[in-house]
Structure formats: C-alpha cells, structure tokens
Length: 176
Image (cartoon, rainbow, N blue to C red; front, side, top):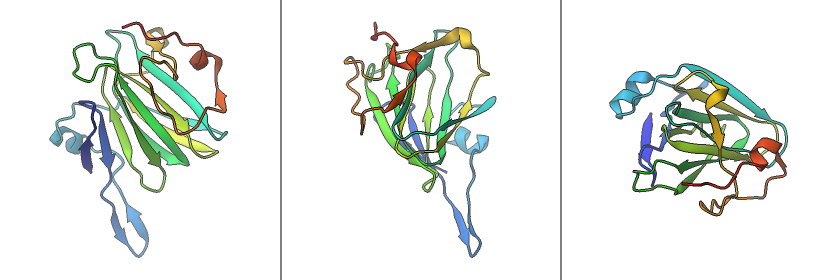
C-alpha cells in the first residue's frame, strides 16, 4: 500500500499495490502492519457499507462529538464518489480547510480520515457502494454534522446534489 499525504495533516490517500497475473489482480484491502509502518494508529472495529442508488447522491458532512471522535478508512467498491474531508480540529494548521479525492472501484484507492475531521461524499455514478472501516463501533449519541454547502468551508463539489436526506440538508452552519 502507498500512503500519500494531502494538504490536511493525517488525511491520507491510500493506493493499493496490486499483484497482477493472468487471472487478474490481488490487492490488500487493509493491513494493520502497513498502516502502523506508515505512522497511522488505526484499528478497524466496525465495517459498514452504504449503497446509493441515484447519481449525485450526497451523504455528509458527518463527524462525532468531542470525546467520541472516530477515524475512518473509506473506499468505493462499486461506482465512483468525490470524497471530502474537512478539518475541524481547532489546533490544526489546516483548521476549516477541506480536501477532496476521487474514489472509484477500478482504482481501489482509499481515503484515511483521522479523528476530528468531518466527512462526506457525492456519488458520481448510480448504484454506488462505499465501504467504511471505523475505529469505533457506531454510537448515534455522538452524531454531529455540518452543512455540505456551508460557506465557512467553500467545498467545490463537482456537481449539485440530486439526492440528499433531510438530516444532511438541514445541518447547521459551522460555529467554530
């Protein structure tokens, strides 16, 4: 696995290093030893899959309350997404900045998002599946979010959302 830094400390692009032969290819989906060797303290305790049936479905921006933060390793296993992380760590040099990465099933690229960042994505294909590996089991009490189009961040989405649920559409502006 190759780990590439983004402009936000701790947010990393994770590219597989496929082993190819006449049958196709083999990739490691996750290897704790490789994450540790890259300086990433991450243990996957829960794995979730989200299916979005519609093109330009927006999910996000989601994060957890202080003391309940979680890290995520996100991959698109079918279709394609524009995946976004926003740095909400007040002491970070990139506080309130965002980064976006194309994830799709053909590249098998992933995005590691550390604790203290908000996360969301826009599907770029219908029938898209996204796999999340989480550092903590799901606890709805800590759920928080900010609006996907909050001017405090200025995220440049590649398209307007065609589908967004009520909760995500009505998150408040960021107050930080």
